[in-house]
Length: 316
Image (cartoon, rainbow, N blue to C red; front, side):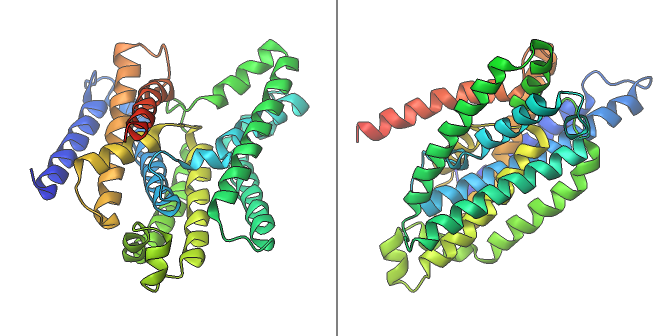
């Protein structure tokens, strides 16, 4: 099947799932309430899927590795540490937790500030190896997880429930006040990358090959990493961390679409991300009766797929 037909098929599936999500169980008596609750969920799933899927795609291009995702930078761990620290110091009734707008802004500011300090420290030393940043990100992520676990042990069990809600991504209580701001940031970030999309096609050949073809690899890599941080920060602050979504959808995209063009890969990645999130939310609401969250389902499937990819690379 040609790529165009696959894209059309995936688009039809995504639209059908969105229509099913909006319409299932709806009647004339509950129509307004159902739309009031479900439309923000759909918007947040589209935004989150777009941000995570696209950021993972360009991150893998820069690192030239198909099993790495932006979570290796430690941003997910930093998010959980931030929420835990707020509850540990100020309690779950703090305005920083209860007010979604303030929590959203603080989360983005802290994650971007951390990334800026990380980049400044690494690039000031004169290194041009992106894997130095990844290594420091892994170390910082491990440190953040250790600090989080330490504070969670000391937190009162009732207070811990507030932290637990933040630890897993959920679309059940989306803050509609931040959807507009999130959509603006995500659209601008993705649009910026589409402006240099052909450069990403060349960078996918590898660092040495891209440089030999005239690409300022290090400069473009820094810009792409900034976009990755912004997209990851916004999506995490919007609904919470979904670790394996990017890994899952990007690799499925590469298997389905036989193309090197990021213009095509990016579009398909976003569509598959939306399909995964909407299908996962349908399972959570109508098959599991809210007994789990969509992040648990995606991380379970993504974790198994990650093991498959590692074993596949090992056998090459």
